[in-house]
Amino acid sequence: HRRVREAVVSTQSTGYTGQDKKMDMTGAAAPSAQEHVLMRLFRAQRNFYITGISLFLLIVLRTMLSRVSQVARLEANNEAIQKQAVSAGSMNKTLLEENAALKKLSEGKEDLLEDIKKVEELKDA
Image: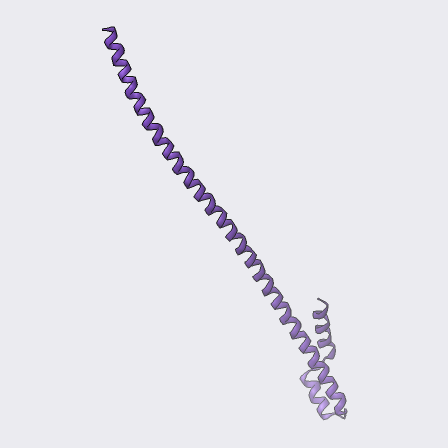
């Protein structure tokens, strides 16, 4: 902030406009004084532009850094979600296999229960 303020104040305090240039060219000012004023104006403007470009690049770099960190977070999140999905899929497969095995066992038990009922009916008859 300090350099920006210095560049603006320096440019404004020089106060060198095109009209002043015409008056200095035709006036009785010494060439070295005129060159000194022009040199100060050039330096002030140069510093102002350098500061402005630096601030712009700072904003661009900061934005890029935040985007890169956001992408990294999203990639890590994506990997965790994919691992979780794979784990859930394998758990689902295991549960389906267990369910099929239990159905086979229960079908066998139902057949046995029916056979027991038939045997008991035959005993009673």
